[in-house]
Length: 238
DNA sequence: CGTTTTTGACCAGCGC
DNA sequence: GCGCTGGTCAAAAACG
Image (cartoon, rainbow, N blue to C red):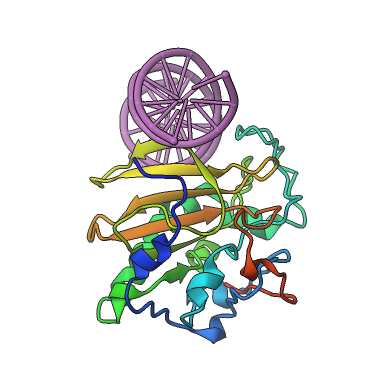
């Protein structure tokens, strides 16, 4: 087992020289600790995002994008939304499209990995905006289930659970097909905060941890220290 | 004793 | 319709 959060893990994961690639044109900005509702750019939707700067490691903590707090859900984790319950969050619900998520989180990540085979791979955090663009190519079906948007990134780490500043509680573990490592499911322990994340190791490279976040925190990171001060606005493009 | 993790069962969605 | 799969639940166990 491992603790739900572990301080310094990020540093363990990114180790000696946490070098995170920055591609500002992606429009992904981790500097805000208090994120407004995210917006998608149709252009960048299909892009894979990376974040940059050494201090991005610390910024990453507590600044992980997620969903607007008022995003509809019955709170039980069970389904219950009507198909018509898609309005302003339509874009989000598309990102939550099951076909996209199930394949999106993993496959998109995989695509990115392959794109970076020759890159500085090792000590990078790679933020993946998911293959929403690819999804958009498909016919978008109306589905009952409204999923929250996700983004995932991979890190090279010996520990699975990276310290992102929030406290998580594990609620499930599952062995997914074609992988030898189980996928763990975590939920934010904060009341009324339904952010989830799942953690798995890459089949191809078990040293790499894939963390997928889903939803938006309605609160600040639990160990909100210096970095908790809300910076100005932020718009996230994927 | 309260909290967290484990783990088998259950359920919904998707593809065939 | 059926089987497969991923995601979640919840009771029990483990932990601090």
